[in-house]
Amino acid sequence: MFSYCADPSTLDGFSWLACYLTNGKHMAFWASFGTVMVLLLITAPAALVFGFGGAMAARSHIAPLRWLGKGYTAMVRGIPDIAFFLFVPIALDQGIEWLRHKAKCPDWEEPIRQGSDFVVCAAAKLPLSSSPQWVHETYGFFLAVLAFAIVFGAFSANVLFGAMRAVPHAQMETAQAYGMTDRQAFWRILVPQMWIYALPGLGNLWMILIKATPLLFLLGVEDIVYWARELGGAKTSIYAYPHPDWRLYYFLGLLVFYLGLTRVSEVALDRLSRRLSHGQATMAGEAQRKAAA
Amino acid sequence: MSCLQTIQDYALRSVGIGERLLPRSDFTLCEQVTLIGSGLIWNIYFGALALSFGFFLATGVALAKNSHYRAIRKPAEWFIFVFRGSPLFIQFFLAYEAFVLLPKSGLEINLLFTQITAQTGWLTKAWAGALIVLFLNTAAYSGEIFYGALRSVPKGDLEAADAFGMTGWTKFRRVVWPTMLRLAWPAYTNEAIFLFHATTLVYFSGFPAWKQKGDALYYASYFADKTFNPFIPYPIVAGYFILLTLVIIGLFGLVNRRLNRHLPAQQRPRRPRMQLLR
Image (cartoon, rainbow over all chains, first blue to last red):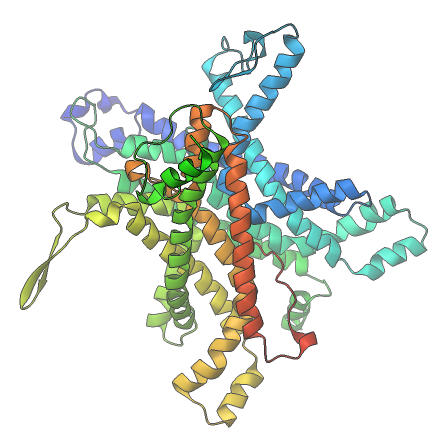
């Protein structure tokens, strides 16, 4: 990074630290903070979409669809999310490969499960074994995002289902009195009004999501936990920057990062809820009106 | 090998009783169910102990956060902020690295008249180290729940206690504390469920599984790695945890009924709804 970093063994003090913190591996470490933010920014809307679907299914008039929706929302209460994070990526991976195998190699004779191996024909592999490294990494990240979206979709389905029920019933009756169909009443009356009821729950969910991001490490993604362990471990003098076991300090850094992230989110969510409560016929809205008067 | 034999060999494997080696090939369904069930002992151990110790610290933290004195309130606020604001996964890693750095030979503690050596090796073992983290973590979450409940104890109840001439400990023991618990109980039930789920993180977060004695999810991922078939071990774990969750809901429901037994039937809160307060 800096010109004086050419020979690290001659450095000491601040310049050593400056060079150490800007070497190639540390640049990958800093970039992995970006990975976490990308995960958050992709997963949050994806989970919302899954959740909306789940809540709609749970309200459905068609019984099997309703059972599916209810089952989806109920599962996160009984089963640890970590089990999902371990299960979903490998299950999806095998499922997709199995479908591609059926489609691309119909005349394949051997069974797919041979003892403790999962064998599909070479053309069905995803990503293909010939594709470059970054495709493999992106595919792994994509599966991780999907696992997060499924779990947090179930959480948010729960929140949205509650929010849809919290919209005053009279509103829906008025819509019917105006001759709206069920579908119109849902999209024009229910959905625009439910967000204020959903906000506290969704805000909480956002906090849970932030605190779940280090689990990316379990899914084999090279995230901040991976790099903190890698860089913090004791380095002998064969490395350019030898140092004793510093993992404690790296994890302290991560702790501070997460505390900052949750604190900023908390403040932002408070502001948002104050903005949305403005003029609402709720306790918070009433308190604002009184304070202003 | 019959299933009964498997149960004899592996039912207590996670605590070190029974067969030394884990099955290596030709896994039967019975082996998977038995061994994963054996791992569940650790989940119950971590969850039950952390919850019962954490309950008392949480009450203390809630009271401290409610205190008029800044010197008492601030530490409680910071404790809750640090443990609720950061991921449990990072807390496990941090605690493990901190415990590893403690001197192997033990800490020399000088107590004026005598010198004692505090052994520190056991802190790096999961049974103690992870339990401490889970204990502090659940104390922070429940402390916040209890604090919220403490703030919503009805004013009339406190005035009634004053009118009866109750003060200090008697007032707390007879009026404030039971009402606080009653109000907090639905949210506390959720916290208990999430805590038991969080125990599955222990063996994936730095704390090594010594002699392959791990929890339910540890054995499930062992089977999934060996057979490369996730569709059997993970549903088994899921089944066990659904049962465990139902047991927790049942037990907490009994306590809830006792806490609310003085209320007329129509005022009693119905079955607690799922809340997401983590």
